[in-house]
Length: 367
Image (cartoon, rainbow, N blue to C red):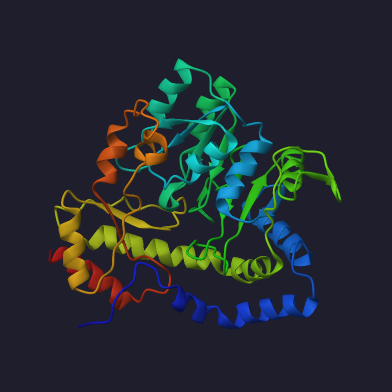
């Protein structure tokens, strides 16, 4: 049997970046300073410059970035926040931690992003305190249209950029459109650390200052807690140093991901498999997700050919037991439900060889 093709292969990624990563880690070890030091400060400057915003605050994870970023925007207990339900429950988890109420918006069947018509309807029905826009699978949403709707309602927008590092529209990067944005640096991300990590980016000095306080116990100054809702959520020096080493390589990796995705879309011809559109720089192909009515048959066929697949994500937020267990009404999200039953993720990462991409295409078409 041919060699197994993984959905993602972090070992290959580690080999390709080994020298730069080892040098970065050794620099931290030799410094004797491991938390909130020069590496974090340098990465925050470099990443904020990359995103085209004034401020970046490193935190411990992408989910913390959502929670602390929203808290800095004034979201708290009783707040109503619009979000999608097809993005792995990460934003919903943050909202529950804040005591806020998720208001679920259905998604567009093709883009799989927040449906603008449904968002407009929700904005017209009752007041919202914020909207979280998730750039799912690496596709940057049409932020001008989103902001046009939310500005008229006076509602701030938080961007969830966990899967969209480097995506661009009109020369602007993901994370530069909303009042603030959250990034994850989990190892599988387009820009990944060697452990957990995250960041909040924003153009507001006030929001950035609030997140800096919240990430370290709510300190106004050392050992003086002046802000409620704080915690220990700090990006450590090792992760920051690794991210600094990888950041200059991100755009090249994204181009490779986009090339692989474009080949899939152009060359997969099985009529039972619906592929995403070919996109430009607004798409960084974090995940390549197709739709089929017989998901398990396709996955079994590909597994037999040593092509691994995954499902991102099989249980939408509005059907998670943590929400449905209370016995309340389940949101009506027909497209979200349809997609959750039919999506399949194919291998897509920069280290895939052209021959492996050809194999994946051939095996899908042979189904």
